[in-house]
Length: 255
Length: 317
Ligand SMILES: Cc1cc2nc3c(=O)[nH]c(=O)nc-3n(C[C@H](O)[C@H](O)[C@H](O)COP(=O)(O)OP(=O)(O)OC[C@H]3O[C@@H](n4cnc5c(N)ncnc54)[C@H](O)[C@@H]3O)c2cc1C
Ligand SMILES: Nc1ncnc2c1ncn2[C@@H]1O[C@H](COP(=O)(O)O)[C@@H](O)[C@H]1O
Image 1 (cartoon, chains in turn brown, blue):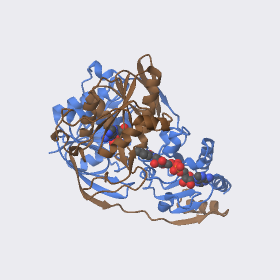
Image 2 (cartoon, protein in one colour; image 1 turned 135 degrees about the vertical axis):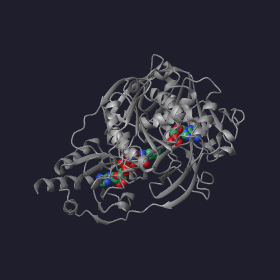
Image 3 (tube, chains in turn blue, cyan; image 1 turned 30 degrees about the vertical axis):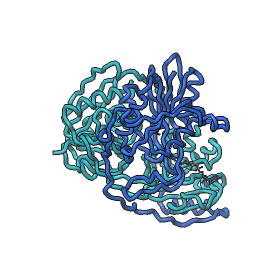
Image 4 (cartoon, protein in one colour; image 1 turned 60 degrees about the vertical axis):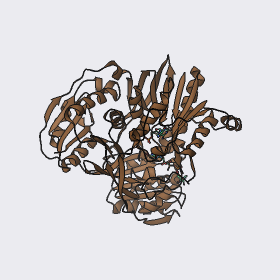
């Protein structure tokens, strides 16, 4: 079975993000890493081939430092990688990203594609669906549980009022929520082995795309500070906090 | 005149609040407004959509729209778009609408903007970034229709008193569109007011330490009445409480009279879902927790002690 997992390199996932002069998120010169949100998807991909046999390929589009995200996935146990880096892709939007990823995935046969539901930095949350349409496969989204059964994929899909069970034959794409799996950590051995694993770096041209195909369609024209909420009174609980809270609720006329 | 469409969600013949909010905005943009509504109950929902500004409602009642996730909806929406060529389609930021808009984008090769907080023109929208601290204007280029997903509660729904022409949509589906099948549906029963309607929301985070301590929130909610219980993603992902209770960027957005954050650190992704609350109380044992920066009343203390004391006082008063 050929399983693909998407991985995104994000700048500084836990620190304070910054905008450059061009209003794009600063991605270079800041410490970056594999998007932690992708780890549950990587785990789901690995568990799938452990059950059904086959290999996992990690596919990423990003600037040169994104190789670090690819290597991290390889060190966790992913078998091989593909990284698409091109200056023309800087600032590209979800349509271009989905096109690039689709073309890269289609360089080989695939049975399943795993992705996270949204990235930590961009959180568009629609890229996997766009990709699925380009690939011509169903997208089983927002999975809180993933199961391979009789050659079909079956998930529990989170919905606003509970969950639904959805099935599809392969090939298919699945987006995985953070709670769906418990990601494993890279081992020292894994980190050593990752260095030997093959990473393909196709150019845009290899993918049959041109800079025009991936031109950005959104431009930021203005950035202003949002009105800020002020901090109010802060008290230390010395046994009287409950009284103060009740008084506050009374002032707010909700009791 | 610009053609502005709303992809309207409904359940059992009732339009979702988001559909009415989006129509109110669409109307304000001064174009020709239409809505597309699909799934069993769609036609029943159509009049309300007309009342909120849709001159035309494309409605499809067929169960095929509910049984195979997004693909049949995208199939029909794409055909309608090809025929009528709208300039802009507004979507809610919900899971279902994200699935539809994402796939549609691959077909229309148009731009898609997520998490919009306002629409300024058919090709210009606004979003808030970095936990709502910056407001950004974005110009949308490329082929129509522009696809914009809007955060919940970005606008207040107001009826305009119109009536809509209801137009049937095709329901013939290629087999490829039906490969994913919904085989079971499990709805969690909700008790008390819905989060969207509650005047007080008590939300719990990882600081509650154990799923069973969520009962302390339920107890307080009961003592208050008109109150509902919410949660952070951390505890939803941990399986303590269902996703329907998640507040924040990828959950619901609430604006109650009073929001009580208990054992919640105040991550930006949580704040975007609740910082428009009228008043905020934060209860956290860490005096440096970011939640205190937006709280009107901050209490540094142990939630497991303070909460039951509040409930007790309310019961006895
Ligand atoms: C793309 C993306 C989307 C996200 N979407 C959402 C979303 O929609 N909603 C959401 O909530 N999060 C979301 N998150 C997650 C978010 O970043 C935080 O991880 C999450 O909100 C943290 O939850 P928490 O406050 O419960 O946990 P923590 O951050 O672990 O905070 C627990 C707090 O409890 C306090 N505490 C501990 N013990 C006690 C005690 N006895 N009494 C009082 N206080 C105590 C601690 O001091 C701490 O501040 C998203 C993240 C990403 C990357
Ligand atoms: N540049 C990228 N390279 C690889 N995967 C990506 C990329 N962008 C997004 N993804 C995947 O798609 C998911 C949703 O992304 P987004 O639409 O940006 O929220 C991410 O969590 C990743 O799994």
